[in-house]
Image 1 (tube, one colour):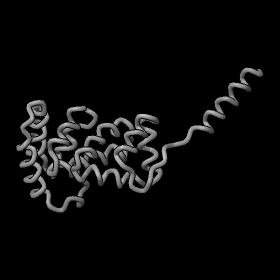
Image 2 (tube, helix red, strand yellow; image 1 turned 90 degrees about the vertical axis):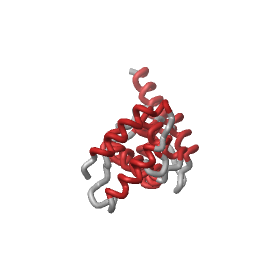
Image 3 (cartoon, helix red, strand yellow; image 1 turned 90 degrees about the horizontal axis):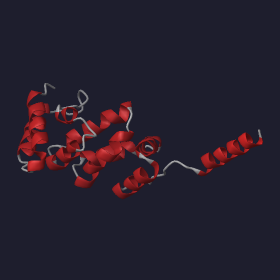
Image 4 (cartoon, helix red, strand yellow; image 1 turned 60 degrees about the vertical axis):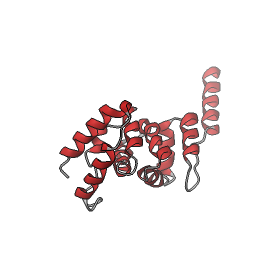
Length: 164
């Protein structure tokens, strides 16, 4: 009985010492990557959501900046229903801005390329879908990296057949 009480106390103390990741108002890629390495993707995503930082991170991914776009593949394994929908949308916004970086994320197979390239916007969120598709198609067509060729082809197919 004493063994179990000691074990319970040890577990309680271990839980007490451990703390969720804490992020500044505008976390950096470096801080988020460190949290993923230290605490895992799920804990990092949960902390970003709980601290109202997830929208900031999503907007930075949507900016097309290569380091932020690449971060999506590290965050994806820690997403749940809501955040798992946000990543393809953020990557779709990034697609016309930095198609190469978005296709590189697709190569990691942490996000579904057909979700990203299938114009996944929530109705009314992207006001001019035809213009978006033209810009995205042009950006993807310019990617000439042979290692990304199958992802480029799949993305072009998904963009061409997207109906939204």
